[in-house]
Image (cartoon, rainbow, N blue to C red; front, top):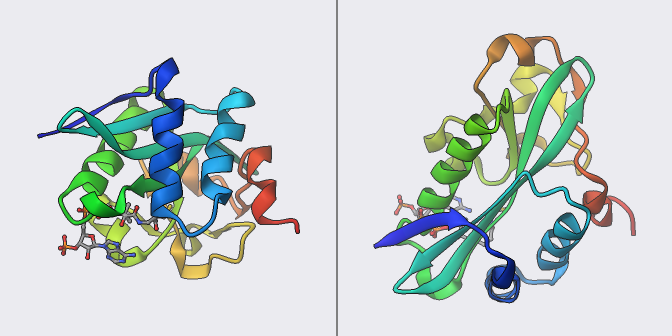
Length: 168
Ligand SMILES: CC(C)(COP(=O)(O)OP(=O)(O)OC[C@H]1O[C@@H](n2cnc3c(N)ncnc32)[C@H](O)[C@@H]1OP(=O)(O)O)[C@@H](O)C(=O)NCCC(=O)NCCS
C-alpha cells in the first residue's frame, strides 16, 4: 500500500536519493534542497511503499501579475524501480489536496500533458499564462478558483531556486 505524508526532518537524504534516481542530472535534487533551505517548500510530500520512501513531490509559491495564491508542483519523482504502480498518481493527487488545503487558487506544472491531464491540468496558454523555461504545451494549470486565474496573465514566476533552470 502506498502512503503519502509530509516530509519529516530526517527524510532529506532519502528524498534526494529518489530524485537523483528519477532524473538524469542532479538539478532537481539540488532544487529541492535549495527550496528547503530557502523556506520555500509550501508542501513536500513523500510516498512510502513497504516502509521505504520511493517518491517525492514538492509545491512552492509562484507569482503572476493579477492572480494571487498560485503554487507550482515541481519536481515530481518516483524511483525508477517503483514507476508504473500508481505512486506518481498518489503523489500528484496528494499534492493537489495539500495545495487546496493551504489555500492555493491554482497549481501550475511543467510535464507531459498526457500524464497530467488526468488530474485536471490543462494548457496554461488557455489562461494566457506562460512559463519562464520555454515549456510550451508542457506548461499546464489546474484551476481551483477560475475567477482568480482569469485576472492573471503573462509570465508565471517560480521561486528563486528555479533560476538554475533559466540561467547557465
Ligand atoms: C512521471 C512520474 C512521476 C510518474 O510516476 P509513476 O509512479 O510511474 O506514475 P503512475 O504509476 O501513477 O502512472 C503511470 C502512468 O503514467 C504514464 N506516464 C508516466 N510518465 C509519462 C509521461 N512522461 N508521459 C505520458 N504518460 C506518462 C505511464 O505510461 C502510465 O500510464 P497508464 O496509467 O496508462 O499505465 C515518474 O515516471 C517519474 O518520476 N519520472 C521521472 C521524473 C519526471 O519526469 N517527473 C515529472 C516531471 S517533474
